[in-house]
Image 1 (tube, helix red, strand yellow):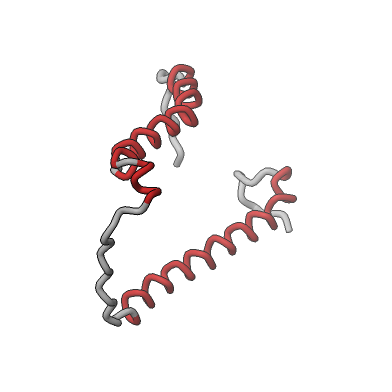
Image 2 (cartoon, one colour; image 1 turned 60 degrees about the vertical axis):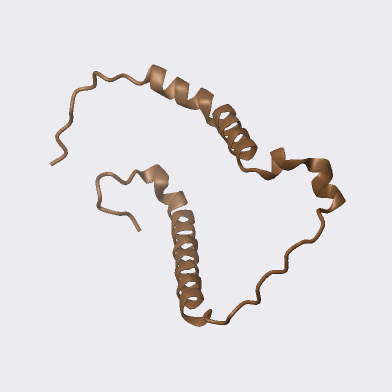
Length: 107
């Protein structure tokens, strides 16, 4: 089936079934997510027992120390890893993007 839309290229015809499969998968996953959220809010009214307090710190916690139990080192590590992963492409994109492109009329 060839579409009459002017923006659909003939080279894209082979990829259209893959787009349909991906869109259907995304739609089903979104439905399952919202169903999970709805059922969590509606059906989860059971009282949970109070957690028991730990009397002694375990040996593993004593070895790790309070520094890594806190959230700040993990936030800093996350920021560094994000900068390493996305820093170079974003810098390349910002430095090479022309900002003097004339506007287009789309209608």
